[in-house]
Amino acid sequence: MLQSIKPLVFIRAERNRGYSEKSKKDYDFANITLSDGLESLKVDIEPELAERCQGAFKKGDNVVITVDISEMNNRARFVVTDVKKAS
Image (cartoon, rainbow, N blue to C red; front, top):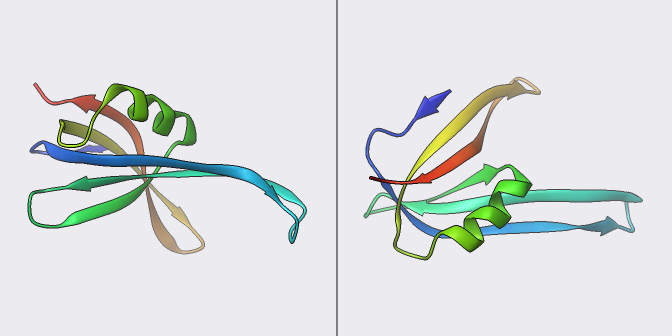
């Protein structure tokens, strides 16, 4: 696991869940949007963590993230597994 070296700015966390009529399956995914002050970055996040972030942080809060890096279909996959307020 990697941890960001400097705080990032929290912009928003979003969770999307429901049922797909096309694939006949439930879906549940989420992402978090962060900024380093110049660019914004949208990264996958664990769905349960997105709801916690929505209640704990407001736009502009400085946060530190923990990212899990794994491989899926020969591609690197980055998922935020923890978000804490920067001290």
